[in-house]
Image (cartoon, rainbow, N blue to C red; front, side, top):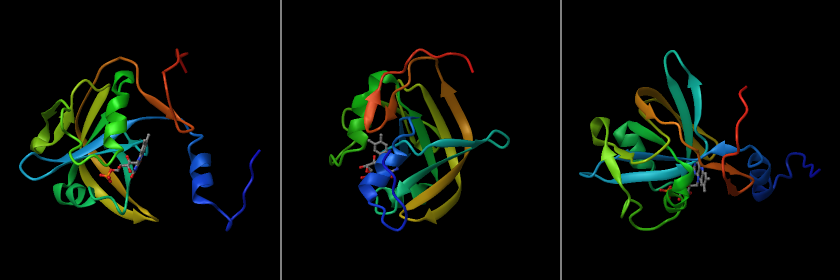
Length: 168
Ligand SMILES: Cc1cc2nc3c(=O)[nH]c(=O)nc-3n(C[C@H](O)[C@H](O)[C@H](O)COP(=O)(O)O)c2cc1C
């Protein structure tokens, strides 16, 4: 067991510890064709409340996409399927045009909704708070859709194929 005590935290090592928690993978999108489209691979997504329906995610404060998330005041959580690992890699890279060759439709307020995801959740930002080196966004869900197919998973820095599930 690798044990560390504050204040000697190494950022890379702390990220490894946090990364022990397996998650799904989302691309959070915002903006529109007329202004600028943005999309960021994010596994900080979490559901928060059912009534009212609220979700959260966080974005690094230095992100060049931050201003569009702020000015648009809305975002879409696109939950990736097992077949969409290429999208996760694309939207976590710094290619000049992340949307080039990516298939998407337009949702509420013309926001980009990626095709073929396991689920898409369209939200209106209700709270934005700077927390450490990230900006935490809370959004109220206005529309969603989903289908039952395997979800892309990420754990300990690797993409995983969804294993067979046992009912909880
Ligand atoms: C699986 C995975 C999960 C990620 N989760 C987040 C996240 O929750 N928040 C974040 O700011 N960056 C996250 N990143 C890193 C961003 O995707 C990456 O820094 C991206 O370039 C940010 O887009 P931007 O350059 O437009 O800011 C993640 C990357 C990967 C591969």
